[in-house]
Length: 110
Ligand SMILES: [Zn+2]
Image 1 (cartoon, protein in one colour):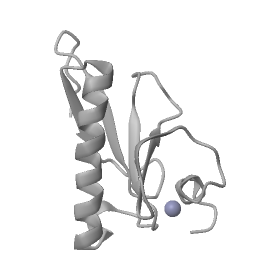
Image 2 (cartoon, helix red, strand yellow; image 1 turned 30 degrees about the vertical axis):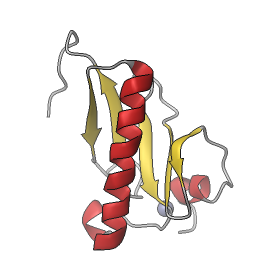
Image 3 (cartoon, helix red, strand yellow; image 1 turned 180 degrees about the vertical axis):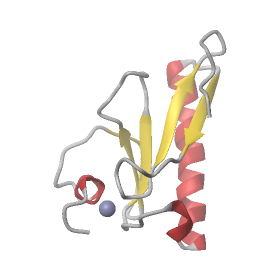
Image 4 (tube, protein in one colour; image 1 turned 90 degrees about the horizontal axis):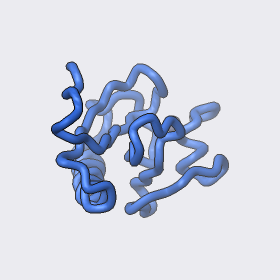
């Protein structure tokens, strides 16, 4: 999609720090805002607005990739767990946030 920053990142038109998983359908990269170190985004290369717009097979690949990246992030950051969230109101290209979290910190509110 024209003027979509995540489409441009997936196409390599905008540099990003890719991490742990990249193939021709799914890309993961560090979020620019590293307020939470290791904050990673996992996106389909194809542009979809909402997660429920993603076709079944691609959704399976997306969530399998997110699980794989979460396992790697947990090892790398020694986090107690990895929070997964999908909001979708900031950048209009479906993306999964993976956030390393520690039990000692206040849990995020939903
Ligand atoms: Zn896009």
